[in-house]
Length: 263
Image 1 (tube, rainbow, N blue to C red):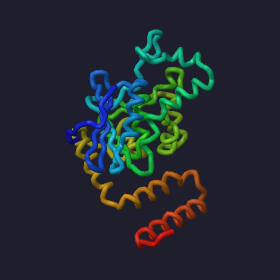
Image 2 (image 1 turned 135 degrees about the vertical axis):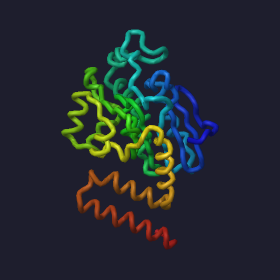
Image 3 (image 1 turned 90 degrees about the vertical axis):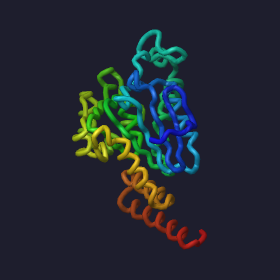
Image 4 (image 1 turned 30 degrees about the vertical axis):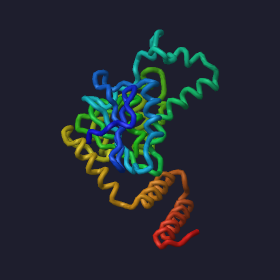
């Protein structure tokens, strides 16, 4: 990716913008880009800092691994300096506990906004929170060494960073349950064959492939992509007749816009 002055660079997250393409990079390869509340806050800030010109957002990571998941220090009595431990969180009130998890989820929600298309470029390990960060994006391009794994259940937890909905949507309930309950690794061939990944390429081709995909996404008019993404995102929740109606309404907006006809 191009070397640009960062819009944001803190807590293991860097955001750069090159006209219509923004790149969010995890920048702690020495620790396999492990995740913490500070990193999640920085990811949420990156979403809020996107200029209106951005149409495509690339999520990538430095080093051999995309992200090895949660920083296990959160499980220890001392925890991460300045952050609550899991014990602290568990002892909070119901409302406080819910609010804390909701705050953490904010790092994973903005990637599916209708006004952008997000691409995760994933290499090496994408475990737990790392897997869920890749799932937060619209599209996934993976290196042939990728290893997805959802390890939360083996720790006595559940995946709670918005990953369950896209996982079931992509691979179906039965396979999603098996992946989560066993904690096993999903490699590149299976990821592509099940729809979890759009394409797998050799590691050295990952950045170039993502760059080409981002460029291809910019060829269609922005408003048409926004309307199409909204249609597709809502399709599973709508009935067939409701989706037909949504298509008609979206097309009416596009035709009137192209013809310069007001509402």
